[in-house]
Picture 1: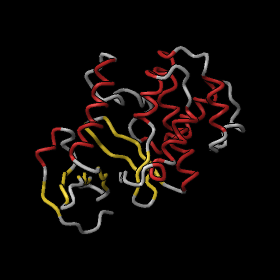
Picture 2 (picture 1 turned 60 degrees about the horizontal axis):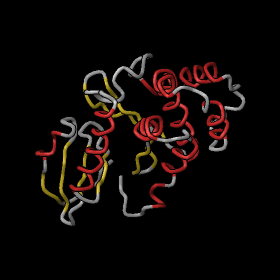
Picture 3 (picture 1 turned 120 degrees about the horizontal axis):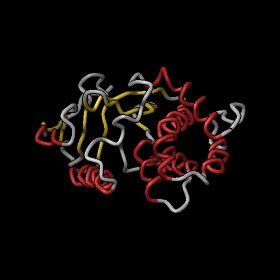
Amino acid sequence: MIEKFQGIVRNDLKKYSGTFDYYELKDGRLLIVDPVDGTGTMYESEKSLREVMDEFDSLVAEKGQSHHVLKGVFSKGINFPSEVENYVNEFSRLTNISKSKLDYSVESLKIVDQAIQNWERSDMIAKLYAPLIAYTGEVIRTKLSGEWQIKKVEEGIEEPYILCGDKLYSTFVDLFKEFNESDEVSVHTVVLAEINKYLLNPKLLR
């Protein structure tokens, strides 16, 4: 939960997501709070928020999409945490990786990388995106002893995060970028970067 803080309301920024409340702190950082559960995301400045959102919008626009990247992704419904195991089973079936090798360890992601290298990018997005969000999320949750945190963005769309202490982790944006931008897709690299992001950049509070 977000503790008491001093700042001014910046709900002029609700254009980015009308679901959340925005506060500018005295030191210039920007805090975005989910009014439902009290959790929040911290950015170094309004400029940092704009850069993140502009990058996200550019990725969507490049693919000719005018909607959220998660729209229509979770075919099993939006009650995501309860369907994680089903998605992992689906991933095992699609890639022919035995469930015994999908042990939710960071090392297992190297096996995942090998299994998906020959997949067409369009098939990765259409068939593996949701299962990989589920599996990579479980890897992070297991590694950091976290829990699933779901944020409703708009009707029918919920963003899945892993909450550990006061920090949020996710892979759905970086997996989307990896599928569309990288010469060689590496899920292992995506997850390592996400797990270590606070260590690599101590100024990043999210």
